[in-house]
Image (cartoon, rainbow, N blue to C red):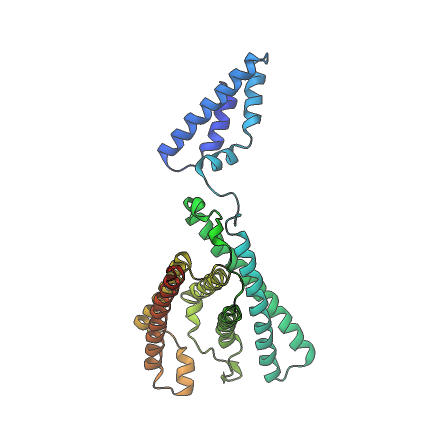
Length: 316
């Protein structure tokens, strides 16, 4: 084969870091190109034309390489798209009104007029929408890439059909709505305590939590909130199963990690906020917050497996 084939193989393999994988892809591509070109030559095409037709048949070398390696060529694929869509819509419907209302109340308390209040609420809602969509998509894109081998286990089966409506359905709907509202309100409060804190010093708001948390812990917290929203929607649709219980345990493990981090770092509250109030019990309160977060998370993880066990237990 000419340098045209060499260029094609180079284009397909140049971003493959693993040497063995790169060599295997190189060998397989050359074999496919040679076989295809020989078949075309046997039908009457000249060697150069057959080679070019073979390369054209294979298509974009980067797509060929991605298909060979099983690398997703999308942010969120069909496995998680509808779950991503539902989670994003629900998160937007819950978080944006709360953010807009909190921003409006903060501006009203500052004595702002109707125009600035409305404009500020709209800007805050739009900013919240961008962050919500970004973080939701980022979480699902990461899951898409961390679990490519789970394609068979993610394939739909009749066992995933929702249960028929029963007298308990309204309770499950209520639990889902309450859970999503709590998560949305929690996310909004984390934003509000920084930008809409009711505590002032010299005309400037004093955030309640340590501002450094925005560079360390809070991005992880917001990501965990998005994952828990997705898990809540999944439980509503599928009920408690072993898979939902495992995901719930992973989410709870994340909250346990947050609790341990708070317990060991002692950086929950803003030092300026503590000093302004003269609050001597801030450290003890932060410790109790960490303990409560860990305790609730452990209980929630166990409860998820208990509920899954009850559902899968054969009826007597």
